[in-house]
Length: 400
Image (cartoon, rainbow, N blue to C red):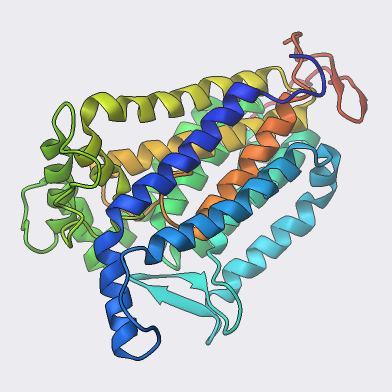
């Protein structure tokens, strides 16, 4: 790809996914829209209920995200590198703000939203992902000769990641914890990190998480349902059971667009966390395969862009963004298919949610920006950077 032209096929996939999300929200959110606007009408806040409450809010956020994406395509990459530390500090402060009285807002079982009167609500976890990607990319670029070391590479990486993970776990937002952990591990591996260190750290994290899982009843119930999807289908197993019913009802060709039965109060958060199940019911397996293919294509193109990135920083950012999109989609689908324990997490570009969609489109624009400078030469020892020459130093041998 010649310099100055972004990856147009990848951009088309991003925008098609966003448009697909708008279309699906218009279909699956009608019942929830009517329910929430009926309550608002009863309080005199609006004149009459409507079926399009979530749709128009989603459309408005999509319209905001599109110019932001195009802006990111041409925004200087070096500016993100210089702003990595301030952005990371702001992200941490936003996570801390969730625990301040009158700032953090409860939604379900977690406090994941900043809600201040007269200001739009904000879910910090979505923007923390991007801030962490930038900071880890800068940090790993500076430590390229030490990243394989256990003492000077893996331990500092773990401490840095734990700072974010602990704040997310306290909300609790285990969906974001899982996505960020996998995303960061992919970046660490791409930077040259020791695979054994990554797997050992994952096992240790699982061991430390076990007491937390057992101490929280609702988390324990989610793991019990994961191990036995037929357990208590009217209470703790209700969401998974209904999601499986929706997916199974779709069959090969679906029940038809707009004809989902499960969206009428059976699927919780149908416009958000379980939109994949509702889409599978309406479209069927044959058509939902195209959705899976879109994320496979993002993975292929994203990692290809990373492999041909102009410098180490851009390569790590591309790996982080691609891993974020792909693994978050995999986790969302895995939860709906009962292949993973239940956790609330959106489908990238598709689910309803302003913070999620805007953060996704900003990150997509940055990935497309990196594609403008992707080179045919994949030799990692010498690449010409965006802002000038970049030559990687020979890696020193460091004992773990």
